[in-house]
Amino acid sequence: MSGVGESVVKRYCFTLVHGTFAPAAPWVEDPSVLCRGLRGALGEGAKFERFRWHGKNDHLGRSQAAADLATALCQRLDAQPDAMHAVIAHSHGGNIVLRAADDSRIAGRLSKIVCMSTPFFLPRERDVLGAALALVRAFLWFFGVTALLCLLVSRLPSFEPLARRFDWLLTRDMIAAWVVGAPLALVCALLIPRLLKSLRGWIKRRQEEKIAEITAPTAGTTPLLCLWAGGDEVVFAFRWLDRLAGFTLLLLRPWSVVLVILLMALLLAPAGNEAIFEIQRFFGSSFFKLIVFPFLPFAVLSEYVAKLLGIDVQAAVLLAVPTIAAMTIMFLSLASVLIALPLHWLLKLAPFGMRGWRFLDTFFLRIAPDHAPPDRSGLVAEEMRLSGRLRHSAIYNNEISIKKIAAFIQA
Image (cartoon, rainbow, N blue to C red):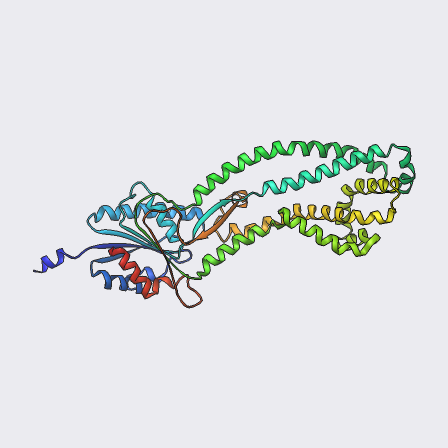
């Protein structure tokens, strides 16, 4: 009789995969709350084996762990072909499982997959190059045109009185710099669209390659259950880090440039004729000289035109304030790209485990996480209401989530 009773016991083979920084996670051990709960719901035919990987926060390392897991699962499937095989994973262990399940050796052979609190990275393209080169091109046109016009106007007899007042400015070295710099700036401004087209093509290819590498596989018909805690602190942190990484290039956005220009114009307008000196005091003499050099041709031209039209020369200084602000913001915008380099590494490459990548691979990508992979067939996704601060790790000790896993396995 005992032999008959044992023959009707359904056999379940579970492979448990821990998450990042948790090779010694207690929940993957047989006496854990999860194992006891599933054995109580499914019977003594439930057997559990752990899969241990290095647990480092490294995308390339997770890919290698997925290959190792696929090999281990293939061996278990071959050793026990009549059992129902399921994998339960936590955190980044879920990304490892989905990649392993996409392996040709085990595709379609697993019965169920359960992912608990897994942050599935969903990369999207981000256009940084267009905004940056648009500012550079605008700056080159501004300087090139105004410098050439200033050089031409300086040859007119009516310009001589103004030239005497600007002896300190219209030096031989300054004029030589304009003679060389203006045509070079215009040539570069004309070449940027062609350069942009080539760069966009290269970046597009890199984006498509890296998006395919990061995105969790969506092929396959193995039923998938995704459980997560509402307010999961890990996914919340990942999302905000991705947003902060985007803020590092805030000044490259057209609306933010316009807004800052208007604010600076409002702040400097009360200074009147002292507006230029206010900027010098605010930014310092070194940065002021950097701004003033390309701005000087425009300033000289403005004063020349103002005198021809009989406008108070001193009042014309106020017209220059928004332009000075525009030049200031342009330099700050381009400088923000350099500032973004270390910030981007801290906010994206390190926490997202992309340290083995080129900087540009993530600089031109948004990598926002989600609780479930997109467009997955046989997907069951559900949010759990859990209390406590560390909800990310509470999911596998929760009685309700264990019951949902058991029901999913039995379905």
